[in-house]
Length: 591
Image (cartoon, rainbow, N blue to C red; front, side, top):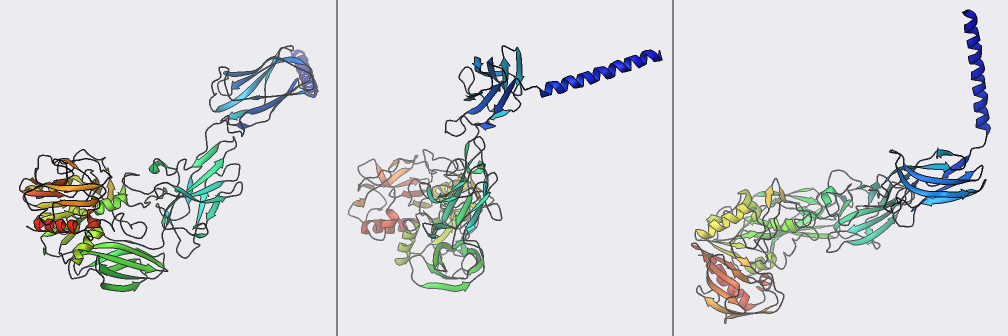
């Protein structure tokens, strides 16, 4: 038994040695086929860069060859690149794959491998190296370096005037950066910056054409190329179609001087707080009434919190003017009476001011307005020179005329009325909706209808107004609705027509047009009222009877007056007929 075991052990040793010698001999023999994968990653997207995967084979003995592309994960045959092609011995044969299947359809992004068959030798082998088909563009997230979750503001306090920009994955070629200005009607490329290959960051000096960039909203976009040759843009669209979902934080705000005033009026003689951003520099300030020339308060400070005492004189709208380092910023501040002093209440459309204010709140590089992103903060600095869009020709022009003619009024904002603070609607006989209140919360619309139904008079000086709703919650505007067919009083308004308007009075039971010769001329745009939602028309002027532009109608016990002319406030100070009708309106509002 022991002898048998010894014999078997000897046989096993001899077999192992023979196998080892055979393996060594096989290793020393040249390979039947030497396959080279020359392209590791390719992107067949037609841009001329890495559009094909390239390969080569070299045979030890000439043979008829088949080469098939296989899906590396499933082993499925995807494309027969070579079928029965004779390849001579010891010659390099090159070929490529365009990323399509045998049917001509694009193959999916995936890992692939080559199956090489030598027909004459009756053998097949898998090429050692895998390769990747990748058509997916990179999405490199951009971040403007800075604290907080909002946009980075330049010039930074006590630092260089520009901003460092970073990209998470710079790709395989030098990155290219573009700085866009986005708070203009059409985004404008204002700077182009190159960076070295592999560089994850670059620097924009905050200048445009050699000069400090104008105050506004900007976006940094980066262009990269990945190993496959795909080009990536981030953000992929300027401005981003959906800023909330845009990757990174590419927004940059350029601001040299600004102020955030309360959305509600200050009370006469009381101290309110205004947040001033002078980029860490000292500033001077002064306060005067809109339309007036006398400075009612002045001072100097370097604090970001300006404690401002409201004038104790007549309520109204004041301009807070800030100056610092050669920059000037003016913004309106409402000052309300502490008790009812005037029968007419002027309501400033702060909600619509902020709904149109082109300021980037989130750092995504797009102005957050109700039309662009669908939301906006209720309290933030107004862009540019500090005046709300259209203020000079709308609210400001009307308020200046009231000041020059000594016409008194109380003042509040639509935001204050929604919050239930400040002057109340029902404490006044008449309400003037100044400017263009484009958006109005439903709760305020309901209050205005009740005010009119109970005998109040409302005059609207805006156009394309009072037809859109919005929610106000937690200092945020959101859920803006598209324009409705009828306004909050039920009137149906036709679109503004931009052509000359010669308006003739054809109905006047309340003496609205009594101070005129019966016509209103000189306007080149107008808005007709198609119907009044059941209200009884008591005064009307239009290009012909039955098509009112300026209209007054009864609703319940009250009265609604609509001018229907976008230039009304602008012309009240220069056109006698416009001024005369406005004075008559004030009489009706004061009853």
